[in-house]
Image (cartoon, rainbow, N blue to C red; front, side):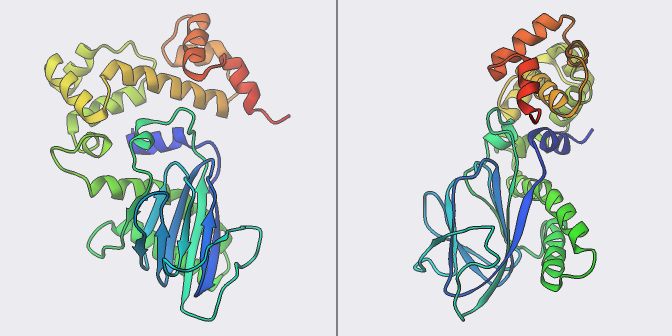
Length: 299
């Protein structure tokens, strides 16, 4: 069980959308608030990110940016350049005759109504700079994307979406690895602690099991108290709280992606009673599971 991949799969509610943007200075692109997580790659040239709050952030070739909450922001060739609303339906935005920049901009469709802690605890702006000595997988993917988009070679329509899908995990993994230290709290620390990772793997692999703190502690080779403390410090919530969260997250994914009966979904996540499952689901999502499924079904 790959916990990070499982978390990202559960957070995603649809395919990513992305587009190539080729600009020459002076230029400035304004991005409205998105319903998903916005991302930008600087494939060639340079740019500045004007975040929702704070100072402009310089970006260079190979840099990756993720705005997990899709907040309003802008990309410009210079902090003083005028900004126009970016319209992805327009083939190329207004631009000048200056230095060229090639960008890939897009959005990941994520469940923001009930975000997983991995998403909820990220800052508003995540920047992973192009560091030749680190994150080779991420920067190799960005380099290939740049070549595919610039050359428009045969097969690019198949290669680009696959790489864009992989980028979300690669960006998150790179950002967490840059924050790997013993005092760091959150998932950057959780995914580096073998005992915590093992417990997360057990929960993710068998969310319907009747887990107890004592049983999880025994399986990862720690005392109950030591395990509960390490898990809570790293993940940000106690083991059984996280278990309940993941059960509901799994239920939502099953309701969204499959047509299994509600009783089957309830059993898979550890509820012996469909009524008890429906009550717990409504408490977390605000609607019964049957209504949740109907809301996601196209008319």
